[in-house]
Amino acid sequence: MISAWTFGTLPEGRVVTAYQLTSESGFRAVVLDYGVTLQALYLPDGRNVTLGHDSLDAYLDGAGYRGAIIGPNANRIVGASFEIDGQHVEVSTNDGENNLHSGDTGFHTQIWNARIEEDVLIFSHTAQAGTGGFPGHLSVTLRISFRNDTLRLEMRAETNAPTPVNLTWHPYWNLNGRGRIDGHDLSVSADNRSILETAQTVPVKETRFDFRKALPLGHVRLDDNFKDVKEARLKGHSTELNVTSSLPDMQVYTGDALSVPRSGVALEPQFQPNDINLDQRSLLRPGEVYDHWIAYRFDI
Image (cartoon, rainbow, N blue to C red; front, side):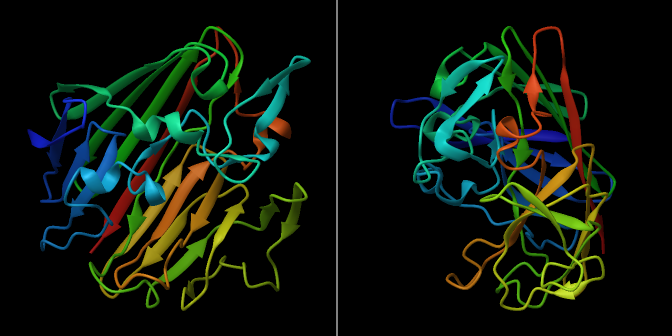
């Protein structure tokens, strides 16, 4: 079941709508058309286990990208530039000399067109060529469903010129519903991680990044990309979240976990950081389709 209401109004007068998806098992997800933002996710017992804001104004500065869809390119592009077929491309900078999460005109700042098809919420957006410096006219469709205990995001994109496409969703999870995430256990099925500065892939074995067996997050800060991830599991006091995806890697980000009283951890399936300057698995060409999914399953 899907219901909707007005969440707020942008300074220029455009209305932002909240959509609530309710599963057969009593889970509820609230998604805004502004940035396709997961504003809240309620377990059947009423706990909200994702970090969101209660007002639209709190989302407008983009700080932390709370719950938003990230695109056209997630993570960092080093030097805010890349080459495609010998052509040099420069994009906007917003992380020192780098481009982070597509800059100030990224998908997290856009109002998406929304429609409902039975129990599926569908968002669409068209990015004009040159927005933020990214080449290619890009058409993106997102399908969100919540069935039983699983929230699923399906992502599809097409372009008319070669361009990087690396989408992810950026919710922060706190399975206890309040407090810091220190008491959560995390496991990530990855043997290796990538280092942004050197583009190296290094083993996690015998390092603090070895989450192949569940470890308490404690006071650790993470902003790291894990390679070839099959799944990640986050466990709170009485709830476990299982994240799977068709994408190869996962960024794990604890962000400001020590600086605010209620914090969370982001588990972001994606291609590796700076991929467009490395393997270019994120390069989408005309006639191709970017077609990936992310699933969040809860065990309570």
